Length: 246
Image (cartoon, rainbow, N blue to C red):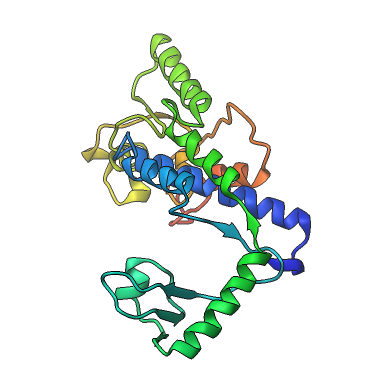
């Protein structure tokens, strides 16, 4: 973001990135409760095999991969270009990259990189803190999951029928539940699904989903970030057919 962004904007962007990262890691947990890969990343950071810094001195958009000669390669090499250092970025996407093996150019790139590295800030402690939260027995959103499950139980005990509940830890087919709750706006006939009349959910359903069959949204809690509330309300305000009444 560099020095062109105000501190307030930076704080909001960093908070948003943290939330996206948390949601992404928790979604992986649904497929792998033990998060073997994250444990290995944590151990590699602790042991110094992975070293991470954040460059915040100026706007930064350089992409440079420096590879030191090892058993699999007899020479140092580098890639400079548009690719992210991911499998799709390096092998599948249409990217523009230069593959460099010339020792003089490699030396210059190393000097440039070392200078940027020295200017960057340490984030090891913060990164490990984020990872450790997700490796605990309970996820960082336990209170929200527990609240949703409490409400689900209480409404069932009160006699509510056709009710479902979704959170980041509950093993249910989300797509099926969403189609049962909002069939019309998800391309299903209400006659062909078992209806869900009341849906209790955490913010795992707060973005990118069509829940327009609903007529009422109740915020049991009020998030500190108004954008999060707008995202929730937006699930009910993205009509595909302006003639349909909610």
